[in-house]
Length: 107
Image (cartoon, rainbow, N blue to C red; front, side, top):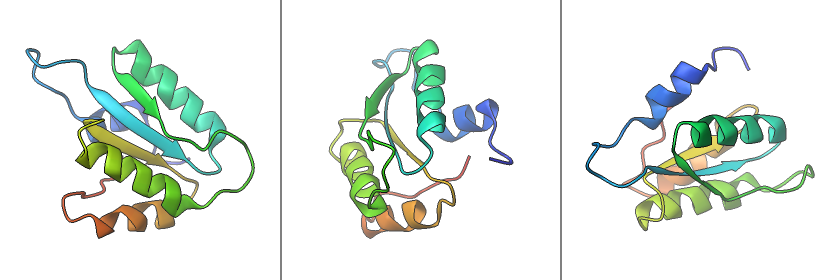
């Protein structure tokens, strides 16, 4: 994936003040299975708790289901941030915008 860097991921994720609890990030993917596992490991090694919302198999999946699950996890306070991984990012970026408080950002 051109342009995707670990620094870019950290920049997109942001930080929490030290006095707050450990940051939790909800992660979901379609197609990019290896990337999701790499990102989960990267975040975990930095003390960030990862909430994996799928997909869990390599078969094709419906991106809106995963994008909406991540948006809901953030809005319900189950995660501080959401990360959607996709080969094109087109659908994954569009699906959660139905939630007014959720504003997708690119790394």
